[in-house]
Length: 61
Image (cartoon, rainbow, N blue to C red; front, side, top):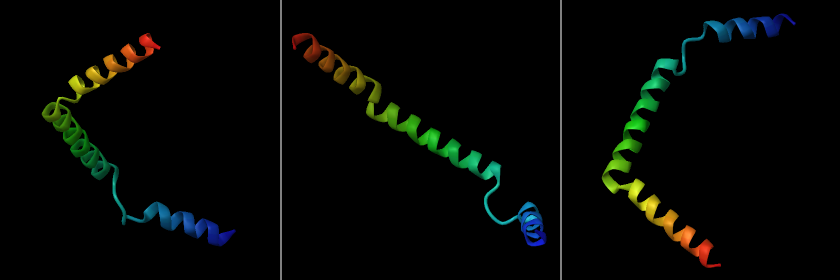
């Protein structure tokens, strides 16, 4: 049982690994990249076209 307590204490004090702020920055970059891709490639318009074609196919079936 003592080794489990020692392990938990070491994990609590360990400072290696990424902090939450580093993950937040990474997520912000990913969000910015996705937003840029949507704006650059007009993915909203493409989605609308595909959606309309699918609706037309379903209505014709």
